Length: 213
Image 1 (tube, one colour):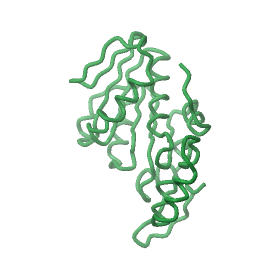
Image 2 (cartoon, rainbow, N blue to C red; image 1 turned 90 degrees about the vertical axis):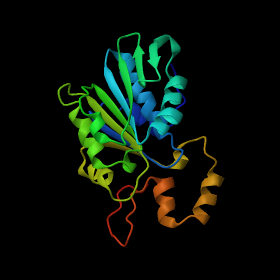
Image 3 (cartoon, helix red, strand yellow; image 1 turned 45 degrees about the vertical axis):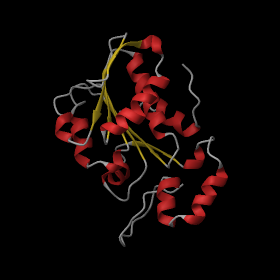
């Protein structure tokens, strides 16, 4: 199945590194890119993967609809709404999980995972999910808008993740006039964080901001 992707989305999706990140501005196609990358892994061979989001509301209203939109129906064997579990005809299983209680993520053995809007979550979620792929040497990736100089900033800065940065304007579907309007009326730091995928320091902190485009 062919997808209409931006250059930044394509770079992230085809990245074969074990750990990767798509750090993007609002409407840069973060969740879309993460979903396409997940679907490619699930369809390539029999795997068990997990899609993780901050809340079940986000799972229900954003990520499951994206999977329904992008995954070819011919690949689906069954889907349980009560279990938030998807079975593919090739034997792959995809679990949709909320990260509001990280301890509930223990016990899984995974070949891959995708954490969406990871910067809004505590570091423990990443640590738990990383431990779920240790026996399989699986792949893990995050998609998120920056949220200050938190653990995502530190992880990206460490170089442990292959990271793609995407501004809102890197999405060809976005009207540049709308972004320019937002730039005029929003707080400059908030604009850079939300539209330019820049890691911004708040509360008087001073850091080198490597995330600016």
